[in-house]
Structure formats: C-alpha cells, structure tokens
Length: 500
Image (cartoon, rainbow, N blue to C red):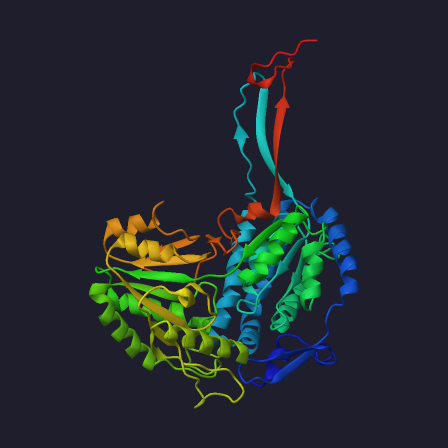
C-alpha cells in the first residue's frame, strides 16, 4: 500500500495533507508524505480559553459518565487498529507488530480508565474530635497539556487522555513535529467517539495543536493549563519542568532513560539473550525504556557476548512494513549520525564494537537503516552514562552483586532496570531499598514493553512523573481534605482551648 493510501485509509483528506508549512517525512524512505497546517502562536490563547470553558462544563459530568466517552474511544480504536497502526509504521518507522502493539496499548489504557472512572476513591479518616468525621475527596484540576515524542506518537497521548478525561480535565495535545499525522488520525477516531457520546461532551474538550517550540511554550507558560505532561529528552525537561513549576503548575515529566540489565551467574542465559535482543533493538533502540547497558558477571560475560553477537548477525534489518523485519529505520539521518558519533567515542574510550554499520542492501533508499551494535566496554565511561537514542548496548563486567547494583545506579537517569537471576536473594536485593534506584525494576524480564496496569515513569533525570496505571490518575486531580462537625460542640484539635 502506498504512503498516501495508508493515510487515506486512516481518514486523512487531501486538503489536510497538503498546502501546509510543516513537511512530514517517512523514516521508511525519507520521502515527504505531507505538508500539514501548523497552529499559529497567536491562536493559542483562544485554544486555551476554549479548554477552560470545556473544563467548567466537563467537571460537572459524573465520572462514570465521563468514563463512557473513554469506553467509546476504546471501541473506535479497536475498529481502526490496523489503519492507525499502519500510520504509526509509516510515520515512526516501527515494524508492523509494534505499530499494532502501540494501538493495543491505547485500547488497554481505555479499558483501565473506564473501570477507574468508578473508583476515584478518597479516604475516610478517624478524627480525634468527638462528633467529627474527616475524609478526602478528589476533584478535577483543569486543562491538561500533553506534549508527546516521536517514538510513541499515540500511546503516550492515550495514557494521559484516558485518565485526564475520567478525572474531569480537557486535553490539548501537541505531538512531535516529526509525527503529526498519527495525531491527526487519532483525532479522527476521537471525533467518532465524541459523536456517539452526545452533547455531554463540551466543545473544546479535546484539541490538537501542531507546530514547533513556540506552540509548546504557550502550553508550558499558561497558568490556565494547570497540568503539563511532557515526554522527551532530559534537556527538554530541564526547561519545561522549572517553567511549569515557576507558575505553580503541575508537570508530569517522562524524560531520558539509560536502562540496564544485570545478568547474574545463575541466569537462564538463553532467556537473557532473547530479552536483551528485543529490549535493545525493538523500535530500533528508540524507546525510552530500550536496553542501553548489560552488566554481566565476569564468569559468563564472554559467553553472553558471543551469543549476542551471533544473534545480532541474523537480525533482519529493513522495511518495517515487510513480514519478518525486526529492525526498522532510525527516525532520520541525524539519529544515525548520533549513533556513529557515540560508537566513535566508545572506541576512543576502549570499546570493542560488534556491528553498528549503516545498512544499504535490501532496504528502501532514503531511510536511515543501521545494524544494531554491541560495544564491549572496559568500564562505565562517560559515553555509557549518556543516553544515545539508537540500538547500541554497552556490555561491562562485574564481580559482586553490590558492584553491579552500584554500576546500574551510577547514571543520571532512573527509568527502567532489570536483573536476570534464579537466585531469590539476588532478585529480592535488586528490588529492595538497596537495589535499583529506577522507577521500574524487573526480574527475569527486560526493561522495555511495560504493561499499562503499572504506573510508568522514573527518577532522577527521568523526571519523576508517573503516567498510565496504578494510582497515576491522582496526578490529574486535586486532593481536598474535609472535616465535618456533626456535633453541637466546637472542640479544637491538639487540645487547644480558646474560650470566648
């Protein structure tokens, strides 16, 4: 199917795909697939005001009724899964199963949020004063700005939107300039859900803005956007976070990762190899949870590298639309140059590198295709501590578990981590207070491919935000503590006396 046919099947019209100022290129072959209209900075105040108007109406709709809109969105996503998945492949370069998997993740969070809409629980709290009751309630907070990255062009929007909607908050979405078409196709699906939902959904409940830094800055700077979810680089987060906090807003930051796997002597090596390969090369190493570092016990390190090198030699790199392809293209030529530069630096720091070369045979012309790389490192050097958004894993050795955990934690980022071991003491130590310092810590499973049921996010330069499952919904609401006096007296707390 041609690029244009993929976009047409997703409901995008010729008028929407032409005549604009933002040029959109497919990483598959580098061709321009659309020129879309960008939101003008001077339009942003009206867009934000529209979201505020929607908030005043939407917060009064009962949460289970708000959940019905999310249920309908899930249904529409199921009906359009193949079409939207194909746009993800076209615009982000993911292999077909990963494009479909991203849409399934959207469906899953909708299912989760529908149930959550009836469980926005507060607590009943024992009061020290006779005839008093304490409780907490949760209330909608206001419009939520969502800034997403190219690597998960639609799933991260759905994590935020499904929860924001049930919590009573409108959403303004600014996608990556590299992937606006997936956002436009998603809004077509959302429009069908809104039409089925009826008049309870106010105008301006869900809005899409397309453009560069100026558009994002308008969301970041506005006091009328109390919640700002931003996914991207640590550099971006270091700018966005303080600006949102400066105006007393609530940032939800999902930033860089430098994820490690510890492979212990007792590990099932074959299982570890399979986990390493998927975690390191899935999405061409462009997930925030992609495996970047392998910390292997010295007794098995050599054997593990040999098995990995053998597995890497057989990895099918090529057109992500073709059956059997496991590694698609990097997002663009700049990403390929960054990979080359990182491997050059690694060699200067003592690395022995397997793979990493450009792939030009049996791939579409114009795409940035590379062979995944394994870099055997003498130590955890500066380049290892730096996240490179490409399929590179750095392999290092260790002697004691304490040393391995220290190495795992000795990076600025703190997103995801894992250990492969059959030793219960090692596994539990890794998950304990003296173990991994990451927001995600796994045993006998790689660091990527998280399910939506758990809260997603990390610590340190990863930003501290949490999205998706567990109690991440609380980030989209304001907590209110209530005390009700149903007695005829007015006792004060802490035994204070103030008689008049």
